[in-house]
Image 1 (tube, rainbow, N blue to C red):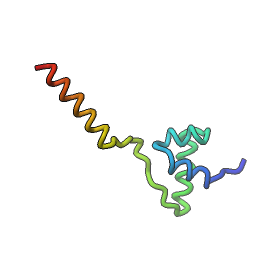
Image 2: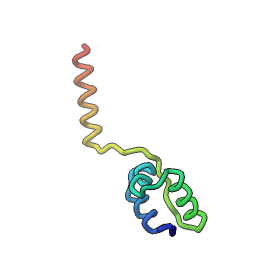
Image 3: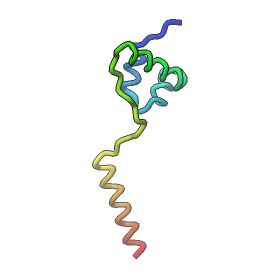
Length: 75
């Protein structure tokens, strides 16, 4: 079986996390990690995934509104 490193890289770059990328590629996270390591060793500057999802300013505003409402209800 031949590994398609181009597909691996594109899927990895377009995913929010390594788990999401591995699932999309139908491989284990360990297999994905090995492929990414191979690419890095070859000189490809593959960015690291933190697995963290960023919150949009709208999300932050909504969460702060929920907290403010909760605090008001507690008083």
